[in-house]
Amino acid sequence: MQFVDTTKQLWNKLIWSWNPKSDKESGDAIVKNLLLHWFPNKITKGSLAWQYSLWLGTISFVLFVILTITGMVLMFLYVPSVERAYSSVKDLEFVIAFGSLLRASHRIAAHLMVATVFLHMIRVFLTGAYKNGQSVGSNRPLNWIIGVVLLLCTLLLSFTGYLLPWDQLAYWAITVGTNIASSAPLVGEKIRFFLLGGTVIDQGALIRFYVLHVFFLPVIVLLAFSWHMWRIRKDGGLAVADHEALSQTAEDVAPIKSKTYSLLGVTGGSTVHVQTSMVNEEKNSVPSAPHLVRRIVAVSIATLVVVVVLAALFPAPLEEPANPSVTPNPAKAPWYFLWLQEIVTDTTIPLGAFTINGALIGGILLPGLLIVLALWWPYRDKSGIETVGVWFAPARNRQNTIFIAICLLIIAFTIIGTFLRGPYWNFYWPWETWPTMPVKF
Ligand code: HEM
View (cartoon, rainbow, N blue to C red):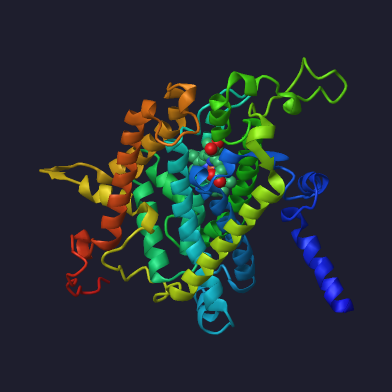
C-alpha cells in the first residue's frame, strides 16, 4: 500500500505541470519550472494549432536533445585518433551491448535534424513569420537571421560528425566537401587548410572536426537556440498571434491590461511598458500548462519513437577503414551537400582550352548568394501586416512561388545526386546496374 502511494505521489509530481488542478497550479507550473519558465503563462490557440507551425521547430530541438544525449554516451567509447577511431566505432557496432542501436539513433537523429530544420525554414517563409506585425518591440527579421545561423550550424554539426568513423565513406565525403570549398578564388586553399588543420585529411583534421562536433558547434546551437526562443517572447509570441489580433474586432482589442508591465514595478505601469501580445486573452488564449506542455510532451515522445524505430530498421553503415590511396567511384559528399555536388558537375564545362569552374559556381558563388539572399530577404519583403502568420497569403504569392521553386530544385538535385549518379558521376536509373569499376590506386 505504502509502495502504491509513493508511486502515485511520484507520478503526480512528474505530471503536475501537464495536469494542473487549478489556475494557481497552472501558473506555478510555468513559473516554478526551469524548463517551462520561458513560456508565457497563456498562449494563443492559433500558436498551439498543429497546422500552423507543424511543430517543426520543436521537433528540431527534440532531435538536438536526442543527439546530445546519445552523443555524450558515444563519447565514452569513441577515440578521436587516426589509429583507433575506426576500431572504436567497430567495437561500438559489433561488440558493445546496444552500441549499434545507439550509433544508429545518433546518425538517424542527425539526418532527421538537417531535414526538419530545412522544413521548419520553409514553413516560416510560407507563413510570412519572419515579418513584424503589430506587436510593439518585435524584431522577427532578427530571429530569422538567428535561424539562418542555426541552419548553418546544423549542417556543420552533421558534416563534422561525418568524418569521425574514419571509414571510406567518411574520408571521401569529407575529401569531396573540402575540395569544393578549396575552389574559391585566392582564399580557397586557405579555407581548406583552415578546415583540415593541414593540407591532407589526417590526425589534424580528425581532432579539429571532433572538437567542433562535440563542443563548439553544440554550444553555439544551444546559445543561438536560447536567443531564438527569447526573441519569440520579445516578438509577442509566434507570428500567428499577430494575425489573430488583427482578426479581432476593435472592441475585443481595446484593453490590453494583462500584458502591460510597469518599469520594475516602481512606476504606475502605463507609460513605460512592454507589450507582448495584442490578443484578447480571455477569448483566444489558454493556459500554457497544461495545453502547451502536453503537446510538447507528445511531440517529444513521438520524435523519440520515430528515431528509435528508424534506428532499429536502418543500422548505421560502416565501410572499410579510411584509405587515402583507394578512391571510391563515385565519391559523394554527404547527402545534404549533394545538390551542390550535382551543380558543380553540371556547371564544369570544358570550352576548348578553357574550363568553366563548376566548383566555384556550385561550391562557393551559389551557396554564398543563397545565404546573402536569405539574410536580406526579411528586409526586402514589403508585403502588408495582414500576411504575417498566414499560410500562403495571396499578397505573397509571387515570392512564395519563387521560394518553393528554389526549394524544389534543391530537393530534385539532392535526389539526383543521391540515387541517380553512379561511377564517373554518370546518370543511372534506379533499375540500371552500375558497371564494375577497376579500383584506382
Ligand atoms: C536548430 C535549428 C532550429 C531550432 C531548434 C528552431 C526552433 C524553433 C522553435 C521551437 C520555434 C517555435 C515554433 C515552431 O516550433 O515552429 C521556432 C520559431 C521560429 N523559427 Fe526556428 N528553429 C531552428 C532553425 C530556424 C531556421 C533555420 C529559421 C529560418 C531561417 C528559423 C526561424 C524561425 C522563426 C522566424 C520563428 C518564429 C516563427 C513564428 O513566429 O511563427 N528557425 N524555431
